[in-house]
Image (cartoon, rainbow, N blue to C red; front, top):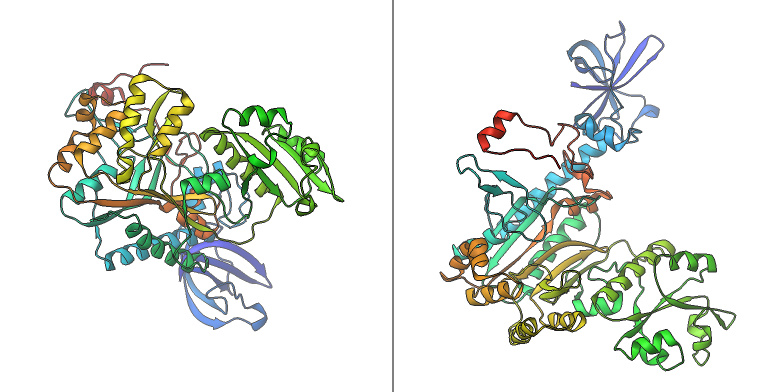
Length: 559
């Protein structure tokens, strides 16, 4: 047997040593001389396998009922004193864990994480292969076509002054593959985005990418994907979920939850109280309703203290009341006197007034904050689809139309005539709220998979008509020259007979992390970066030699 020494103890002239490898722990016993070994050494032993005393069984080890009485041993490699012990209850900081990542990866929990990741990958490959999908690889060195985040760029030595980009996703390639006749494609794809990082975001990540030809109805994709996801989460997370998952429109979830990725483990829903509170004399409500605002109420089944409410008011603006002993208190109390207060006994009611996308997004932030702070989830898992997103949205900060997700999503046929209104409004100029309302009328065949309030995947039925694609690109502000420069290869491909097609990209790192109960995707990525984009183990990014820069025709400019 061979492995790393992870524990040693002496008792009555005997030396008990625990060896560990990827398969688990084994106790070996040196009954003669004390061995010349220490923690972290790689050791091979030879001896006789025997039963351990029953009271010493380790049922948490695969080989916990036996031990090896050592007859001979060999030190295969020595180890310096370890910066921390590779155990699951590691006390080391995350910085130390990332700096000494190979040692961190020896921990049983990390070994389990990557075994499960391998098993999930294998399950996905078999599932899709059985359904006629080809696994195809798209290029890593590609053209810079901004898709919402900054590209990582790579200088091209053989083309001085020009650059490749690392792909943010295989989006355009997978559409071209449909034109090429590969009617069912998938890829476990590495993707790169130069953006600010957090626990569930890395500069390089992995997604399950798939595309299908002759898809015109989103349900073709949804039914296939939810069966796959149910299989993964039922097997590796014990979710016991059964398709079909609930379907909600974007409009429904924004009205009811204030979010396009609501966490439905909490039953909180917004109610429209416009008719109930408008005209009751509250100046804030009445003045805003006159301008077209809506009044939304959230009933929290908890009676909060005034201190708790005041702390919420530091981050959110709302009116409120609560009911105790049949009487209302709070700054809305006098405006609800003619309301039946019985249903609100022991509860706190929050009231908001406003309109437009930013208002509804603030409702979602508030719901998430109070649900997680004051309630326990009613169930462990909540899966849902959100579909029928607005194709376009108005960027209030920059005063322009932009795609709500990406501009290659197909609008519903009945909404294509609305594009003319947007084009006319862009020519003549309209106010922010009017442009926002116009943009949101055009719905796209877009769908997101949401699990426990986290967007796990996003996809759409694509535009396969080249003229419509060009029109949409112009609406978001691109000129004909820019369209040709950035997306000419896609447009030309669509002109060669593109079938209707659609697909989805699913965040594989997040799926694995959720199945394993990990809060951060760094726990399921072998060599992740820090939140500042630094690879502590290998020390990247790093300087390169002046000779390399000269060969590439580059100069570093101090900023």
